[in-house]
Image (cartoon, rainbow, N blue to C red; front, side, top):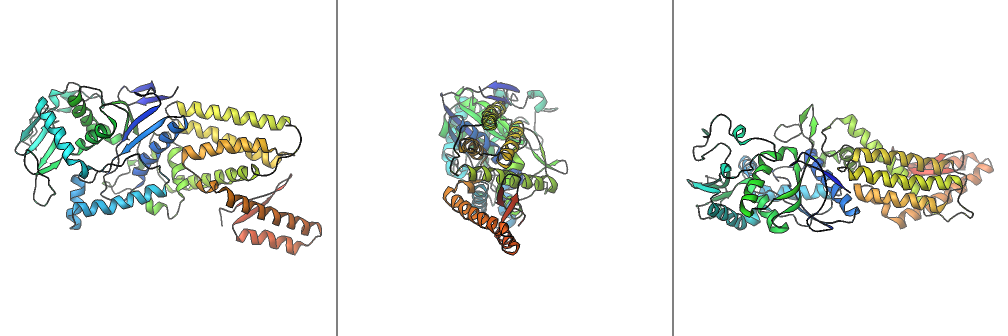
Length: 477
């Protein structure tokens, strides 16, 4: 049974979907006012991995992730750059899609955009107004938080604390209370606007996610997710407006990922302490970035330093080497004879590793514990191939099948899937190794060294072990 830490209840809960076998999931996507940075990538990769694991566990996942393309920060960027909000949105939306593809993120079922759902949001506000949860003030429309009894339940705050010392907002006299939030904002000079029953203006930020979640997934969904910074006020506001409208729970499970910190501060564009994904990909592989993110449990913070991401790259290189080695041996012809005790032990290790991996992931997707299992298995697989007298196809194929499952769940090492090209390269390298062995028998060290050196120039390193000569892709080349 999968257990999930639910931010709403602040405890682990058994995962049970509304519709058996189907997960309806809404993930708060980015505001497209700049390039994708590592903080965005942390959320995207973490939830992409969880989604992939749920699919591995045979759930059908309907995954919605929005793009916020109209919001205060969008307007600020557009004003500073003397462009329209739409121009800014289109540029950075293309950048996000490019970087998401580069990081091998699975496509969402739907990526709705706020600008394309203004009419539905206006209808949402009208219904709240009819129910008495919203009020108009000088062209603005606000949600009256005092009308919603459960306000503050997600962030575990009491309403009187949220309202601070008084009930009036001295910064905005149009609001009745400090915590009331905008559903509709009256037009201001230079800002984009749409017609509405309250005059020309635009929607408030929190409204888009409630509207699009209910539109594409229904009144109550299984999972709602996002960064920890969205718990309050964004997700708190979503709950208030959605449950006031429908009278039903908005989401069963709330998942929130931890921050990536740089110099002990949350990485964010506003603080100026961020690394753009497009720049990181110039020096590190997508596999390394994904491993940097997923080796830490999704709710825990990650400290970003060059040393740590360098280590992630080294880990990616080592894992790729072992995954490829196993795949190559899983395609060689079988050796005659029964399985030895060593073979049986290795098969049992694979079986136990898969069970331990699932146990770790079922406990709130604990990738940290899962990778402890993976690293132990890769060591055992590496030793089996390098030290066994008689490698069995049944064993290497069993390891390879599990490695393929891991690659799919973590979205890494897609190049290994090109079986035909891998098989061709393997055949050619094996022939060269055999030829080199013949030269070595004849003590023709010049030709033997030439084969080794030419292979190294081509990015293939030979390794002499007590049992056999192995080759690997030279990641230092």
